[in-house]
Length: 158
Image (cartoon, rainbow, N blue to C red):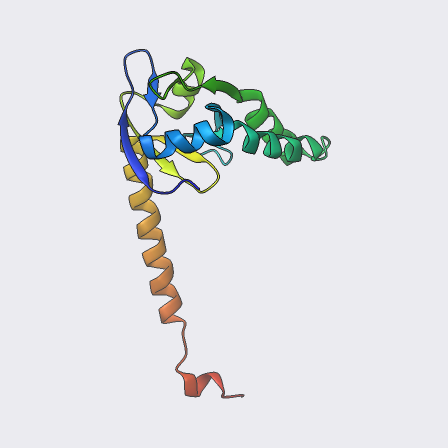
């Protein structure tokens, strides 16, 4: 399971080093083979899967009805951009330039564990998105509180 947020610097060649706490798990689970693809909902981030997990997801994607526009779009984006990468001896992967460009990755990035995968974000984009999600959650909570009825009124039938 991959959890937590880690700030990472990409080197000038576009390589990213996995933190040691993840590296051992990736080597154990997939012999250091990962698949990098684009974010599935239009988020400007990359998704990184251990190869065996990606193969499960890929099979699910292939089974989707190809005549369904949404399914076909997902197949094109996720499978079409999927790139296999191998951790080198220093626990790094080289992120392909088209994928770096898609996610707007420069030097400072954020690796976000999402249990079965990672999301890789440009740090300023991540911070802005996170702040927006927190604000939206606060607004939703406030709206929900305004719509709550006291317990006595919930049982009232008119």
